[in-house]
Amino acid sequence: MKAEEPFQRKVLSVREVTGQVRQLLERSIGRVWIEGECSNVSTPNSGHIYFTLKDENAQIQAAWFKGRRSPEALVPKDGMKIRAYGLITAYERGSQIQILVEEAEDSGLGDLQKRFEILKQKLKAEGLFEQERKKKLPLLPARIGIVTSPTGAAIRDMLQVLNRRFPDRQVLIAPVPVQGQAAAASIARAIDYFDQAQNVDVVIIGRGGGSLEDLWAFNEEVVARAIAKCTLPLISAVGHEVDFTISDFVADLRAPTPSAAAELVIGQKQDFESKISRFDQRLQSSLNQKRLQLRNRLNELRSHKLFHEPLHLVAGYRQKIGRFEDRMQRALLREVQVPQRQLSEQRLQLRHNLEHRIRETQRQVDDLDQQQARLIQNRIEQQRNRLSAFEQQLNALNPYQVLRRGFSITRDEKGNVISEIKNLKPGLKLETLTHHGKLHSTLDKATSSDS
Image (tube, rainbow, N blue to C red; front, side):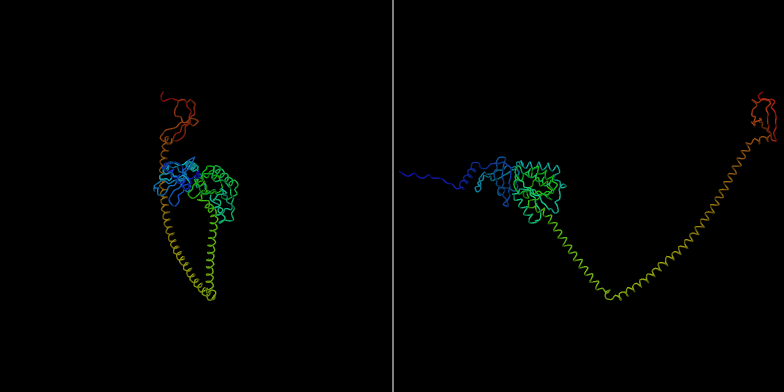
């Protein structure tokens, strides 16, 4: 009887298995279009692009090699929703299913990117991004508040920079989760805590780099509102230099990295110290220059002949003073003589002018006297002529002139002139005026000429 042969096991290497999986995927699925949202986009110096395509349930790795991309091809970005065409395969070293992209087109913004743009426009319309509301960083902050994860690389980087460049500062850390559902509310509460306690001079919020989903807590409205309400200067330092979040726009200052945020805060102190050092150097230089100038001036004065030949110098100045006095006296005499001569000439001219003016005035007065005399004489003659005319008129109206011509005037005893005989009664006493005298009579009878 033959001995039974042992069971023959077929043992495959890991590489053989992953190779079969790759071949199976490439043969069974091959090239397809996949639609999803981009995240974790990486663009190394090689020119290749690596990213993740995902939807709400799953994700797949994608690689787009430089040789497969045209210059005008779409460039994937975090949050962008695209349709990618390529070969479904497996990356044997990492045992990951991936798509080798050959073509891609934009299928619209991803959900997170849409939410980002909507909130950004809303807060911008409210004026939360305006430069006028930004607060300046303190010149020399004594206490610095940091809102970040206590276990992340960001806090280690910031503390390293602060310890190296500003060892005497105080740092208060508000430990919070920086991603996940509870992160946004925790970050907002930490900001409110520093704002209410007022126990720091400046606040830094941030974390290290990551995908759009990783950084999303800093895109939440509750965080933006807390930043806008904060009365303390606040720096947003989220992700890498290419990453932008809503907190960057609302904060008083954006730092490209957490380390840069620490440098910005400490830079204020270093700038101040540097300015003081420059001012000190300039002051020392100015004082040294002034000291040198004064020393040179003192040496010049020491070498002056005043200190070596004082009597000779005084005698020379006395001669100069004597010459100046003589010149001044002559000048004063000239200055006095000229005005005196001018005054005499002006006095003669003034006298001549006054005499001429008096003669002219006297002639004018004589002419006026003659004119006035003629006017008075003419006026008297006119009045005399008028008086003569009035006298002739008066004589013509004088009743006594009528009596000279043989007429008479009869009056009653009351002196009333009798102009008509009606109503006269017999016995009435009458007085008759004639040129030569008066006649008194008694009325016997009155007879009308009409009778």
